[in-house]
Image (cartoon, rainbow, N blue to C red):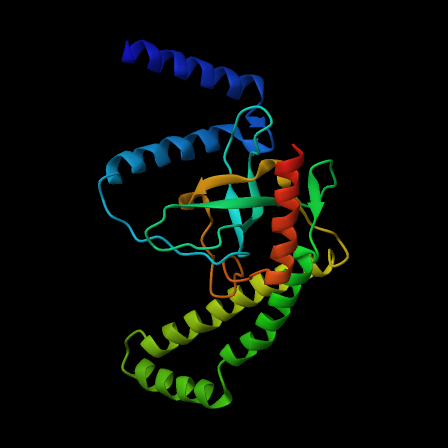
Length: 240
């Protein structure tokens, strides 16, 4: 029976990948299925282990991979807001309100657009990043150490380290500038939370920050704005 079921699963999945041209509900079908199977395997391997999870404050903006889901359930990656009033390192899940830039019957406008918060973050990060650039004294010290090391006929560790530092600075700078440009273009755009797609998710679905300048998990919506969101959610539940 297990082998028969596995064969059916494989047939169904191959059919949807073929019929959809590997693109359905805005996601890469085969990639999402691969991630899902790997996640299940990791769950099975680690289900008896105690883990410490990242605790999130109420109102934290995160980026969630909702995967490939059924019917009207939300699929794909979306920004989201943490709704839990309390969280801790022992909790493996959180409740989130997904965000969108589109209007809709159940899409409620946020008091402040997400692009404004993200644009401000990257503007401040750009100013702070300038301090990471090597000073004149550091550059001169590297040059003298490189000359001494090269005279020994060996590869210069100082030159390698300095080149790595400059490349890291360049990569971070490109990350900041590209994101700043993207969000400046959307400063006037409104953001909405999908009140009909509020869901409790595993914290494994939350994307980790790419580097120290990535704002995900660090920007928190003010309490007054979160109070407005809570009231709208309560009203939606009572009315429906």
